Image (tube, rainbow, N blue to C red; front, side):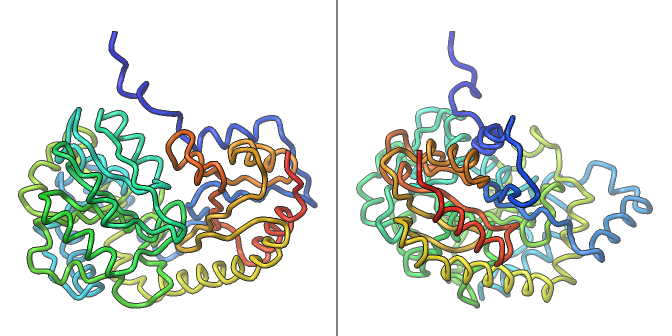
Length: 392
């Protein structure tokens, strides 16, 4: 009997890690520091919550099926936002709204590849990307990143075969935090175009880059949609995680294929969440900028803790977005270290093994620390607990 699609992949890493907390108790003077999931726990700003409440009460269309590819006004507004942000030209006809960025990725791959095809993923990779490729029976070709945690286009070129359909990049990266330079992204675009591949760029954390201004110039190319497929999420920017609103930018022809997937899986993205995203785009630019400033403060707190961590053998190898990629000093693998940290230090972080192929040395040696819900004082406490932790 053939394996069911879900049996072809591993258990959800966040679910598994949360399971490590079962039976543990934490005291008021030493509460759990949860650095496991990169999603803000605070709700959206009150003004946006009021918009959601009013729409739920007074707009009947908030509770009905909507257009499969998303509300027209939101597609128009996001097209204008992307065009202004990147200095390029994107139209509503090149955009679909999805039920979150993961949904955008799955829909995109359904339009690109099938069983036996291959997709190149830099490692460490975002685990949900790997899980979908497993379930879809699409081969994952690992592209190991260097010590700078950046993928190399020349190494990627050597991995391309007749079965390759796409290269996937995530920037700022989940899990390492690395921000890919514009020239790196351009080189991957040129490689993908020359070899007839799609280049999928997931920029879920676009609004939290360390360098202000356009993250890259890919949209300046008037023919960008013959190669580039761009994924975005409103979850982190407007704190709409539970409303599941994301987007994919690509060619109208590909959107016609993606539309089939969306119509089959969700019929349409939630209208209420889309209304919230539209209002956010029109009204929350300054608020999002303030959230970016807070993320930069948290990154500064992580950098400030790096010397003390280094003194105990820990190494801050990557930092960006909501993430720190920290190499641990112990001989055992990162999963064992992460489980012991939960028990003995009241710290929940995800092991690098969740983001890498089995046996991968980079994954075994590191932890992903997500500070979406940790302010600077809590980050200092986290660093102190890591320094005090003596291993297993």
